[in-house]
Image (cartoon, rainbow, N blue to C red; front, top):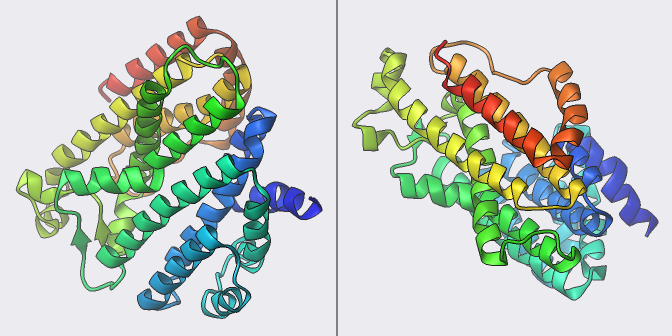
Length: 333
């Protein structure tokens, strides 16, 4: 139990300061499965992003970790993982070194929670594998070809988390919503997709430099050479997906309105609000046409942490904030 507490406390806080705040806000019964699911997903993400290791090694280790999540820890496999994946970040290095503890923690979870964690990690690691297969070779700049590919990717790495989160809520919280599980899960899927689109749009310039583009330019009759020559040409593509992200986060707003537990609402409001504020900043300063990476200031984040308490307790105040964010987004700069 002590190991579980340190994994879900200090280690979780060190690898994700922002999401750690969300987990701390959750009702008690949700913190453990959500925190453990995040740690395992972050470990898989660390493997996928360890550029010092060849793509083939990362793919093999992702498959090995998925196998251990499904079947239990394997000491020789864990030792090989520690040799082949050595992150530069100290917190991520500790996460890989303590993966065996996380897997043992998973084994001790209630059967239903464990099954849900295994299911969501199976999907997340599949999305990470697709990412490596599409972009891992580092030969030129590769781009997704269709909207369906992007939609699949956002579901596998984030939308499925909305499903996972919602299933846990129906199991652990009584009477937290008047919606049925199927409808709330659909909103949860779009909630996750929206947050992932925010990340993709915010990181567009950095991803292009790294040789990858998640936006399907070919559907707009464009290619990367044309956009590199004339960045303004990419505005239509960018704004199209910006609008899609706004639609997804509006589903997130309806997700929040549909739930009554104030702690759960508070935990959901934080990523929703910061996601919307990021989209507003991106519309003001499209990354293809401006240098620098947009980021919500720490001062604003601190303000949201306080104000979200009031939005969590009142649908009227929540709706007012949603309308304010919508006006800010649609205001021409």
